[in-house]
Length: 339
Ligand code: SAH
Image (cartoon, helix red, strand yellow):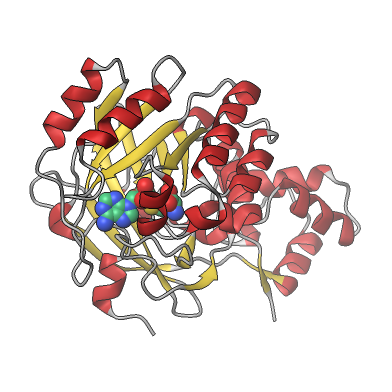
């Protein structure tokens, strides 16, 4: 069977060319054709000999997933894309327009095995990891459909990116070097896998790291995020401090406000105690209520934010986008029906 070449990084393409008896700079040329020029056939690679092109043709494919469905939110014009890959698995991306450019929320896995109690992506577990090419496809296919450039990426769609570490790193490097998306314009969000956060700190990447915190008490966090049983809050926060020491990149802590769960006085006091006086940015998120899950959006978000600000906390509220289009990750895929 022919192998899909779209999604291979510089190293892999260099090795492939070497295998075909070529000099390694040919790998760089291949990278350029695939990701900068985005050609669709090997025959367009005009600086390769006919012989080399036919060798590539015999052994490889340049293949993409397809757009299955697009839903547009009539209020904020965000668009949710549903993609299908060759094995008929589906993932979602959300396309958003901001003053500073277009942003795409990218999925990293089909489903997720982290089990967060409020999240629609995880209710049926993780089917499989996405390949780097399937993450790149989300950008590729949205740009092709929209005829617009995407300048910002948030890896906040379905899946836990640090649970698919190698493919996500490959994706980030190709998006950066091939699609020319600045590292500072790429945000990776994790529920807090400590060993991978430590490895990430050593990757020499200037990306943004977001931690899904959602609770500042160990017991409370365990109740809504099972992963907290394995990676305890104090160690998680320590690994975040370490990440900042190594990379100099300030971390964003995401906090989805859930009525009666994490929107209380003691939560405000503990957030203030933990973060006052050290580099931080807290991003409050309105909860997207998911059918069948018992959590409701908090009614006191504004007050919660103001009280944190009064305590000297650097806190913002994420604009709620795409509530009409089931933008909470995993909801559209669920509606369409998974296999
Ligand atoms: N697995 C990664 C990235 C995917 S989720 C992570 O946990 O960070 C992206 C963000 O959306 C996370 O902060 C996640 O906790 C949050 N999220 C998930 N379900 C949500 C919901 N129903 N409402 C609001 N935010 C939600």
